Image (cartoon, rainbow, N blue to C red; front, side, top):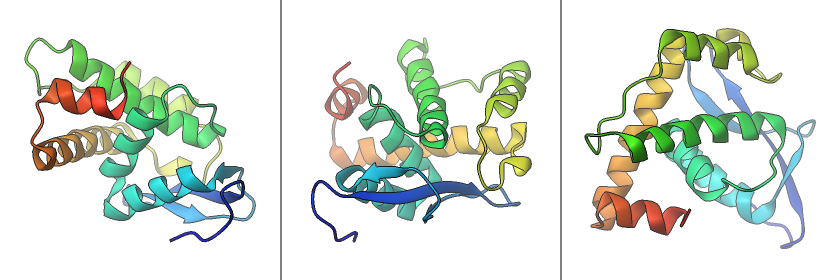
Length: 153
């Protein structure tokens, strides 16, 4: 747990390993996040990247975030948007290869950015879906109710 005053901030960054694991790590050189957000993000990424991305994409949609955080938040929002418009609820098709390649080109400077590939993005996409279903199932709510609780918009 992060222990600082409510108005304090915490310097955290996201890092991608050669194996494609997206991790949240303390980084004194990184832009800071407010303590409350940092605690939630650290806890979600401690479970796995899918839970971390779900937290970013569902709780901080309208929030200004540092570039790396905004990039991954927008990736998760893309997943949630695709879920909401999918004709078969719960089945979210992976973006096509051109979109994945564009996402790779758009990644901001971050540790491990050179490891990003369509396969890693596909795995993170799938992991976000797995995390969503796990959390939704544990809540006992319908998909629509779960999403509304996470972010009313």
